[in-house]
Image (cartoon, rainbow, N blue to C red; front, side, top):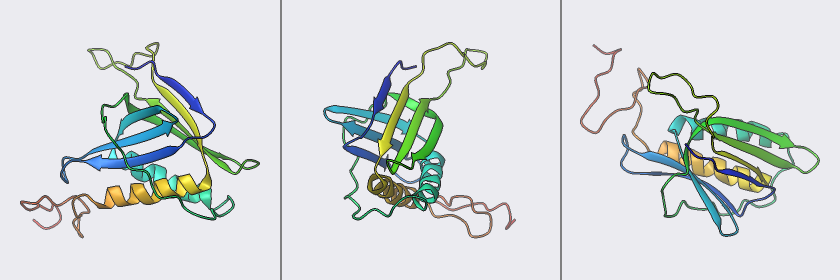
Length: 167
């Protein structure tokens, strides 16, 4: 559990990447504002969902004139927390994208949620160009994994795949 609470009206970098070999990768999101760098662990599906939603939001905002070179995730890779809830939106008058990231809700030893425990929270605004760069980087990271089976759409391991549709 983390008690991290950060809000930034703008950030210098907002990046996503994967570490490790396909099938055993760890996805990380990093946000940098000045000397502050925050690393969050997330699931591949969360990175993919963020990209899909942000692309839809970007359709309603003015086109980015230039897309900045995507930032890379850099050491240290120790995550402040594991990502749970994601909030995404936009501010039309400022043409900015809102990203709100909450730590996953902790559970007690019986698996019940601990609702009053402190949870990490990050809220940032991105320019449309930063959001587009994040989407492209996320799409590349997701695509860098294992290939999917054309029949069942499950990942294919390096040593083969037992397809439930092909038995």
